[in-house]
Length: 462
Image (cartoon, rainbow, N blue to C red; front, side, top):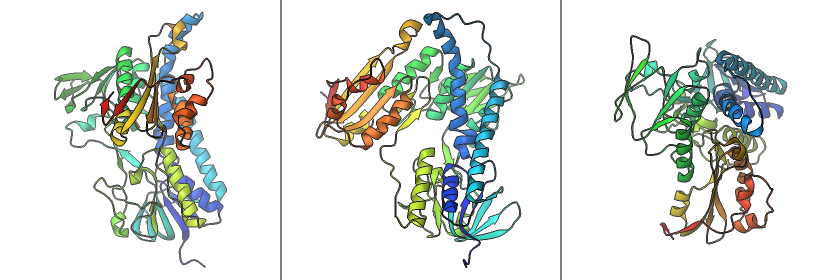
C-alpha cells in the first residue's frame, strides 16, 4: 500500500493540469486536482475562448457593410453588450462543465480550493487547512496579468480579465501594450463601436513577429480608425470629477478616455504557492525552472504550462502534460517539442505564422530567399473594402527548406495550422512548387510563388 494519500496531486485546473490529472487517473492512478477558481484555466475561462467569441462579435459590422456589394440589403443593426456577455457566460459555463465531467468520469478527486506546497511530497488545502501527501505533484497554475503596480493610478485600470465582465461597453478606451492581447482587444473594442487608442513603448507592435506582418497589421488597424501611438507609454492615470480617466503619457501629453486597459504581459502565477517550502527553484521572473522532462530541481515536483514561462500557449501546456504522462507513467521518457510552433494573432486582419521571421532567418543562415505576395482578397472585390493580404515564405537557400511562413489576412490562423505540419515535416520550396493549387482561394498563393521576391545574403538584401 502506498505511503502517500495520492499517486498524483495536481495544483491548477487549466488545460495542462486537467489533462495530466485525467490521463493519469485513467491509467489507474489515485489522483486529486485542486483549483481555487474555475476549471478550464485562463484559456477557457478568461482567455482565448471568450476572446475569440468577442472577435466574432466585433466582425459583424463589417459583414453587414460588405453584404451590400453582394446584393443584400441589410436593415438597421444594433449591438447589445449585455446580450453578448450573457451568451459568452453561458458558453464558458458549458465548457467548464465538460472539464469537470471529464475529470469526474476518469475518477479524479476534484478539490475546489487553493492548494499550496508544504514540502516535496505535501500540499496544504487552504480552505480546510488539511495537509495531504502525494508521490508526485504537478504545478500547473498558469500565469496572471501583470498589474503594472508601479504605475500611479493602476488601480483605475482593467486587465483582459475584467474586459470580459464589464457592465457596460465604454465609449472610449486606451489600451497599453503591443503584444497579441493588446492588438486583439483593440480590434475587438473598435469593432464594437468603441473609440480605441493603442499605446506602445516600442517602435512597432507585435515584437518578435515578422516585420511585414507587424507593419501590415498596423496599417490595416489605422485604416479602420484605430489610433496607434508608438514610442510612448503611460506615466500616470487619474480619475476626473466627471468619472473619466485622465492619462498622462511621456510623449503625447494628456489623453482623456472612459477606460484604460493594461495589456503589459503576463507573469507566472507562483506568488504564495509554497515553492520555497518544497525547495523548488524559480527564476528572476518567478517562473518555475524545469528540465527537458518538466521536472523541477525537486524530483517529485513537476511543472507544466505558463507557470514555467517556456511557451505561453494552451496547446503547449497540453502537449507538456502528455509528455509528463509518457515519461512518468508509461516508462517512455518524452520531452516536449517546442520547435516550429504555429501560432495566430486573432487581430483583424488575422496573423498566422510558423517558423522564423525574415529578420531571424537572415541572422541564422548565410543566404535566404524571400517569397512575398501582397494582393486584394477575392471577397473584397465586390464589397469594395480596401484590404490586402500578405503571404511570405522564408527559404534557406542552402537546402531549399522552408524555415518560415507568415500570413496576414482572413483565415490566417487556419492556414498556419496546416503550414505547421508542412514545416514540421521539413518540406522544401520544391515540395511547395510541386503541389497543385486550389483555385480560387487565397491559400493558393502559397504554392504559386515560384520566383523569389528578393534574397538576403550575409544580412544584406540582394
